[in-house]
Image (tube, rainbow, N blue to C red; front, side):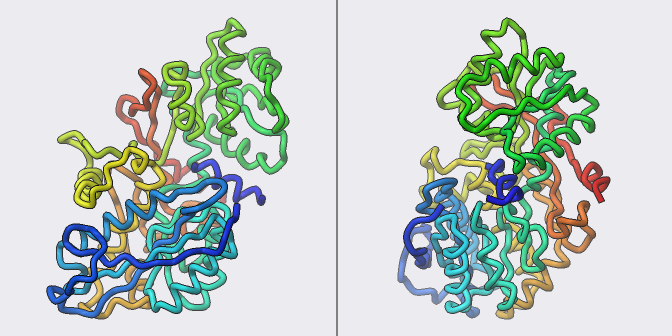
Length: 415
């Protein structure tokens, strides 16, 4: 696995041939072949591709969240009278299957992919989308092609900021001297680079890296090195399964060291609960909820309403990845509504998107595709905002305001 694909894995494998289907929804949000007489314009065909059946890093909930968003648009009359017809395709987290999904989109005359994601297979999309000049809107930017392709319009997060932001949350929670924990594998070198940059940005002190083989089960020596280096906190760069061992080693060391980090902390909450209390975390958005507070961001309220309207209330569907891909729908609507009625084509969408300034206040950072990107080596990524959280009572909560950090200036300095 390439190092940048590994970097994408921080944001949260192949099996059989990718399966494609379609979802044409009526006003109730359920699949239906009922009349579309209320729509006055030609249909707009889109595809959402996600790893539905995957051996690793599956995210089938993306289909549910994107579908709920599209159903809501259709209930309101679609795009200037045109109904959106949404096709789904299982990419299995595999480049070949991702390419098959893109080929199916071309065959079906879809004007764009929307909310699509393939953690270790994203490169497969672009081998087909670029020659066909079909955009992918609100895609999860886990592959370097997501960062550079003119067909890519990601809005949910920057993988670079995903790694650099946790030290900011840690410093805000009182950490002053931070050690980094992660694999010995050189593929992890970029993580350590960005982690150290985040520590410096947060005005904390980096005291060293404590690296370990992937086969490690006893983390006592790993933690002992960090303590010897003077660390009061440790930043875990993963993997998920190292978190219990790191916490256990910290607790038995007699030190008051705390563990902070990425999604690896949240992914262990169901098993560790309050044992992770005090752990600072940075993530690309507030945690999605179907019961937003009265003062919650407007897009979070819309997400909750759309999911409820479609009957998608299973807690397993309320994930950060699903919510990140849901943001593709308001981005598409914003761009498509600038195009004359009945004229939404791939070319028209690309032109409109390249003039779009998408700012989902309170749930993600701004993505202005008309402006230069902060990091020249990632010209398609504009959102470097992360949300600062901490574990309390076994749950992640936002830290006291300000609980957002925009790392655009940090990564502009990398140019």
